[in-house]
Length: 304
Image 1 (cartoon, rainbow, N blue to C red):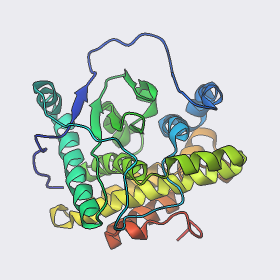
Image 2 (image 1 turned 60 degrees about the horizontal axis):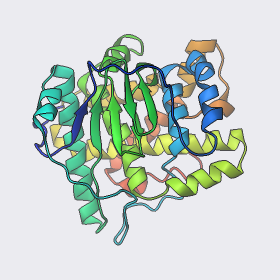
Image 3 (image 1 turned 90 degrees about the vertical axis):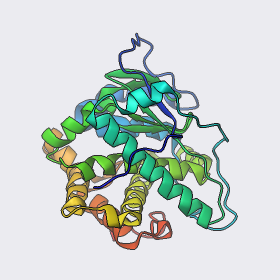
């Protein structure tokens, strides 16, 4: 994918090379202790993507789906975004960091434009690099989590070593596969801005584990669709084979594929991200339509 250089006003942080001892998760709100107690279990059975959703369940940011339309508000707080010399250093630390900043910046421009066209308020997230371990507004950041979004500080957290794992362990190499990962996390920020976090949290508190997992699946599939919308909005920049790279990555990280690899069997009721077929379908839906209003995973079946 042919990306422009990152915009100078994006907010970038870098925790690489810093020491973060002990402490673990410091998740707030009801249910945090329970989720933290499940961390070793989820990591062992489902790998980094299972741990990522474990963190995400504390701050679910999808739901009843107030999609982009005129008059929509943002749940985020306004903030001043200024680039510092540290941010420049972070983005230019290596090729993976530079690519991440470019993809992040592209997604930021795309969604700002879409929100403006809809007459909705837009607040950008920040991009936060860490290496091995770090801190977020949602608690500890660990490489085993993979990339994740923290709504508490509106940060997208990336340990770029994950991209090596994406290529080697999951067989999903290529620049658009890596960009899809960032665009997916950006999709969670869009869900957060649409103000649905509190409603879904209330839903989660009133249903059982199976129903809660189903809500999580719909949330993740919508973020996949939003990632596809970003790709479609930048279709002129795609190279031959980019779409296939993204779909291959979506296929590789489906719950059924990960469960089959980890435990030799598939338990659909425990899915939190969606099957490989579902993830591919919703990414493709976004890529085909380029319309965030076509990403309604909360109405009807997710198997479309």
